[in-house]
Length: 66
Image (cartoon, rainbow, N blue to C red):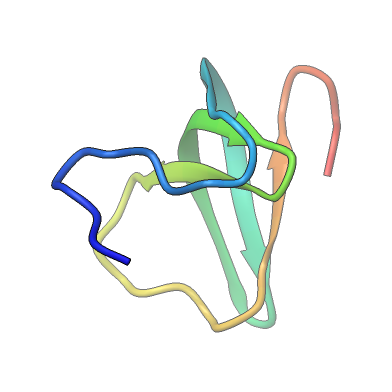
């Protein structure tokens, strides 16, 4: 299967959002911006350069949703 650059390959469409969040993991907590959501994941922009742990929980601040 060949995909062109920018072509959507996700099973579910992304929904653009602009939400404040926190990426939380063992010994790690950093503010983030939640950029989009889908049924299978989210895309975030971290506020600092340190790489996150391999497994994290992202918490949307306003709604308190993890």
